[in-house]
Length: 337
Ligand code: CP3
Image (tube, rainbow, N blue to C red):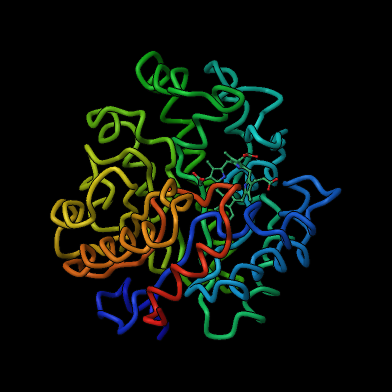
């Protein structure tokens, strides 16, 4: 069994497994070269390109897992929703979903009809090349997807999405339930094509109150993951106030922790039955290696009390990161430095 799967199962592997969110991407010159002339979402849906991009960081850094090169909005694109990714900005929707009528219209689309051919092909190509290294499949959590879809693009406090759950709880529940099924379908396509772990990204959940998270979000996220049949990681940013809820009643095998909270404190909160993933501060990647090294050693030490610890950043790799910093973190985690 790979070290990643052992950590998720709570069997302390000898070496701390490590991978990085956004390890495939603009921090790598080989990625920037491959992406020239291809739009982000088109690259995701071109199987040999998506597969090659997924493999690049594994070859370079020798990380313990690949994460499938795709995007949280891909299943919406596959469902026929008009969406593009604007470079430097993020997902933008041609028709934001703001009213009960908009919700009624979009939820007519049956997630079962989503054409997963290109995604499945990309996953198969990747798994065939990876050998023993596991592939992590992923999807966006309903709230993070809703935050983009309702707003129509990136926003700071996701006010429109948070408003809908109170102004029109029925519409909210219909939309979040549908997004949960869309993301679930995306996870299933990746699972059926050979992914061996899944991660649910709720990157913007930190804008929610604990009460709203519990009442309006957690049930939908739980539905996206429950019974998927693979070990799962549930990640959010700024979710310290409701970190225990991120366990989704034990459905998630591991909870992702951002950089704000010391990892040992997070471990106390999630308890003995759940592994943790994190929580190197992405800002530290800009620091001289000795400073970064001390930080990484501290994170690894604090992670020792966990049921299992997967070393990662507290959020994605910033594009301006020197990739050698990431390679050194992997070597350190593997006891090679
Ligand atoms: O390496 C990996 O982590 C796997 C690939 C991956 C991407 N997006 C590729 C990508 C994953 C797991 C995601 C998930 C994703 N997409 C999230 C959740 C994770 C997070 O970072 O919080 C979110 C919020 C999105 C939406 C999104 N897509 C944003 C905010 C952006 C950035 C826009 C920009 O240009 O800064 C994207 C585009 C995107 N997705 C890029 C990558 C590598 C950058 C686009 C590019 O390289 O041109």
